[in-house]
Length: 90
Image 1: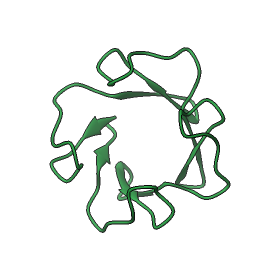
Image 2: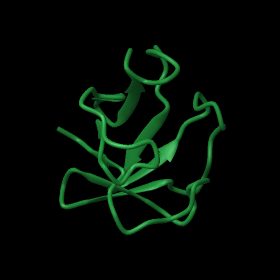
Image 3: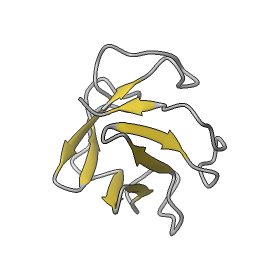
């Protein structure tokens, strides 16, 4: 999963997260390095933080998947909702 130009920290040419099944794991390129435990879970085109995320688990989704591979932050995201994708799954 790659950051887009709409992400608050800007575009990234390296993946920050790796998709494994329904879970997203950080990669070496993530600010905190790679993690053996998933930070996010995908359920019905919505992305939820897991208990392993530094900010903890949430019963509200932080991202919505649109157009198959775009992740758009929801109103429940700590950084606020937006209409442009912050991440793309490639």
